Image 1 (cartoon, rainbow, N blue to C red):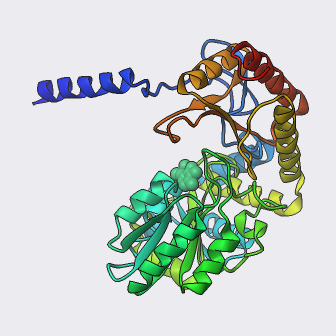
Image 2 (image 1 turned 180 degrees about the horizontal axis):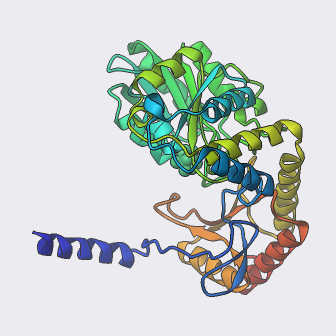
Length: 396
Ligand SMILES: *Cc1c(COP(=O)(O)O)cnc(C)c1O
């Protein structure tokens, strides 16, 4: 059998490669941080990590993880409800609830699991899920696993959302689901308007704060802080794998009864391992740090404003952003790849995205700013963009 299957796979892989969509891994040989070393020995500045607060290599978190490693061992070898829960897991859940101003929290191995396990235990064929067209793959997969009727609205399009909500009046319970920040444009979901429509059409709201937690809002509490909706949203999901240290782990936080039900019936929680104690301990340390100081959020916001301002001054077309994601618009797919390659030669690691990851003729370079970037890093990145941009005729 495998001989036939092998040639089938070879053909598929070839067609992926011919379409220019083959994904290669770039190999890093240093810790994750602003200046990294790659396997060729070259040192580059990293502008494509989700390391928004620069915590991936933070000493305080490393020390907390090491201490837990010594005191609590390496792994749990169990799901949470059998023998995979330490006091550390409960403490981390409490910290997350405090951070987001919610009633209770349940941890998962990843946000992919949190989203995969949130809909099916809560909703049935009598209910409706109304989902933004640009929501993350894990939300799409989670919705697929649930029998609720599906409605989709164009990205952040409130008129379309209202239409879908009218149609969804036929169902018993309704939930609107959105990413907090959309990863390709960096735009923030208009949660105030979504919430108002939810009130008007009797619906609940779920926000995935993966790209917004730690970033959006004055103190990084996410879109509920940005729109003054703390405690009002039924479900928030998020990851510990981006701004919050970048290791691993996800969570669902929100109304008490919802979290209770997830502990009873959410399959990735019931049938998958607990996060390691060291990750829980570092997470606790991280949330303590967040409540002690706003230094990192302030620096991130300053860095982002500085970068966007200077890039616009240089003549680049940047999508309006309220996050740490800056889309440098080039429109042309081939140009986006050329530019990313040239930028790497200049020592700046950024990624070009084009169709089908973004709409046709909307190719771009995505730049992700971090509190781990110093002014000199940003200046070097802007200088490289300006040099390469002139070379390639993107700016004058
Ligand atoms: C990254 C991301 C996830 C997945 O998070 P993991 O913890 O890495 O599984 C889910 N949702 C959104 C919106 C994301 O950006």
